[in-house]
Image (cartoon, rainbow, N blue to C red; front, side, top):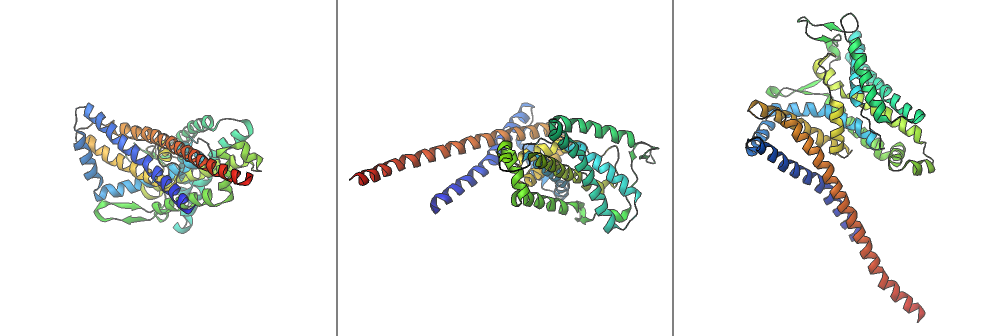
Amino acid sequence: MKKLTARLDKERLLLAIAAPVLAVIAALVITALIILATGKNPIDAFNDMLSYGSASDSQVYILNKATTYYLAGVAVAIGFRMNLFNIGVDGQYRIAAFVAAVVGGSLHLPGIIQIPVVIIVAMLVGAMWSGIAGILKTSRGVSEVISTIMLNSIATAIIGYLLQPGKLGQLDDAGTLVSTKSLPESSWFFTLDMGPAGQLWGFIVLAAVAGVAYWFILGRTRFGYDLRAVGRSEPAAAASGVSVKKVVVTSMLLSGATAGLVGMPTLLNDSHAFSNNFPLGVGFTGIAIALLGRNNPIGIALAALLWGYLERTTNHLELIGYDKEILGVIQGVIVLCVVIAYELVRRYGLKRQQQRVGAELAAARPAAATTEKQEVA
């Protein structure tokens, strides 16, 4: 029995590794063919990506980007774990960052107090915004896909209205950038000086804490068990005593609270204000990263690093003559390859299980027949 269990565990591990490896190889081959079709040498492109991406300043850039992407991926993954498709992370993190910037810019408290206040405000606003979708789903049956898309538009409209001179925004000296009041320097989050490579955002520490919390809550608590049970089968979870509506609303609140953290690395470590050039689309990037990381905290971290690496290196490809659309092509190819590869591996694993069960049943029949003959005798 122990040998069989060890063999099964080894096979599961190999299948888990096979899917991302197969996806990466397929993505590299397809990307090489696409680059080749444009009349460029894919080997030169890959060599440039490897050399430029390994530079120290690129590594700091990648880690900073990955911090934001990781939080977005975790926010999306919380919903995915119970089959909720939270497309509203983009609106949730933007309106959370906007309100947090307004509150932070109007306060002048010691940093040890103000930084937690700004972060808590962002999480509360994000949770509130996603909670609307959760309540609509449980009380009126409105699909979270529809409601979160609409809430994204509403958040954009509210920010656009309030972020104007004379309201909550102000023009810079050049008259080209509208932003909220800057956070006082005492409330800036710490950075790590990496020398010529630049500044590593200290919020990477809180991103790691969020990942550990995600793993613990979903994998080691009763709520996490209920959430996963509802994701697998709502009727079965309800029959076992789980309040499905409560779990749906709570998971949307948690997803939104995590989404509220997405804008914090930029706000507290970089811009120190919310402006009309605050990062867009990070929430949608989080969907791809959660899919790529299979909703696993470590997988999401690796996917976030890969996304940051691709963004850094493909932007450099544009400077040396490659088409600027190559980034979108590579990202799209990787997501498609991951989805296809995991499905192929899943089907292969299911087939292997069926073959094992069939073999065990076939082996059990002669033993059962022998026992029956002995009893008759």
